[in-house]
Image (cartoon, rainbow, N blue to C red):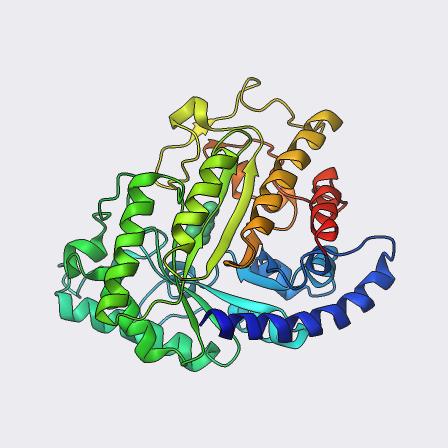
Length: 384
Ligand code: GLA
């Protein structure tokens, strides 16, 4: 599978280089991110429904110029995609699938099964009672089948299960687990494997993938799946990190441990929370269930876009150091995807503090490049 995705990467890369030549006419002095990491790993970003509806917008020009992979941020999750039984919102995912195919961008299906952003009806019968195990497995299969029929020829990388393991390594007691039992993840992968095309890359995706409890359970799970022939093709490391956590050593160690499973690694949701979160509940967490705080002058120091150049430089240095590590592990990493294109798109403006103005990505709100973009590109070019 590693070879397979490297082949896909190589094919996409040649298309990417061709398209980026065109994109560079827009801004010819700027080498692109995807070219800087060509031959190492794909570089991606998430897009949203508004962006795929406006393919000639500034943000989509950035996507076309700089990224060789793309993920929809919300529109393919069970809730937004299928809010009521029989009601489907196909428009944005359809546009996403066609656009990425036309542009030769590797599309990622996010996400088949996640405890969050999944409507209650999924787990209940018409009388409001929890479904039986078989009935929920049937619903999961129907969803996988529909995704496969509609997008299987265009979307070749899928987050199959998201966030099913806790920090301490125990299984998350979500409704999936309560109804199906401790083999929920296994059943999800079996269903995905039955329904998705044979060349689809199926990932287990989670945050906090530097925490030893979770990392150890993931490794145990992969080894067990391999021993028993349960199909899994890769590991998604979300990468919702901050300025000081996890440390480079922690990232290095966990990449080494996870790669030793033999599965390719995908960094799936990278962002650096410049404003930080450790003051609220421990660094490096990304649990969307945790309660939000309210913005104050202390936790929201740059509310008007007045991000100081020195802060921008520090963010760039943090990103550069992290990308040096990714390069060190590039043989095991197939893709690095940012969670958003510009700072304005980031979920970190609303979590864990509602209404903050955060600066976690490589592009400013107006689409202009931050120092971080240049620094990350330089790291890639130096390794070419
Ligand atoms: C999780 C999910 C993503 C997204 C991010 C941030 O990591 O996997 O889909 O919701 O949180 O919002």
